[in-house]
Length: 140
Image (tube, rainbow, N blue to C red):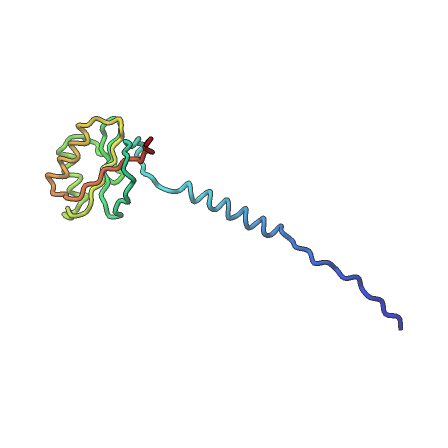
């Protein structure tokens, strides 16, 4: 009986599946990074030298665009008067004036619009007020 040896086969490393998985992960991370919500109102935040602080999740957000229109938690007020802002802000707070209030004002808005929002918040009894800015790199 004549026995012949089979040639030893070299194992192959198939990387096609690895490349597929990496590409799927890349697409997944690219898509999920675009869904980060920075706010519905298109505003250009003023710049400050202090580092950014994290806002509380239960904060009420008052946004003011460049034209001075007010938005409370993303919903635009039809009437831009201080009385309408006060009523809408009181309704959004639902009597919980210890919650933080965050003001996101466009850098091009008038100073009076920001002061009006701060004044209304003070009249209602809000004690925790945050003003959102962007961080700039100092030249020192």
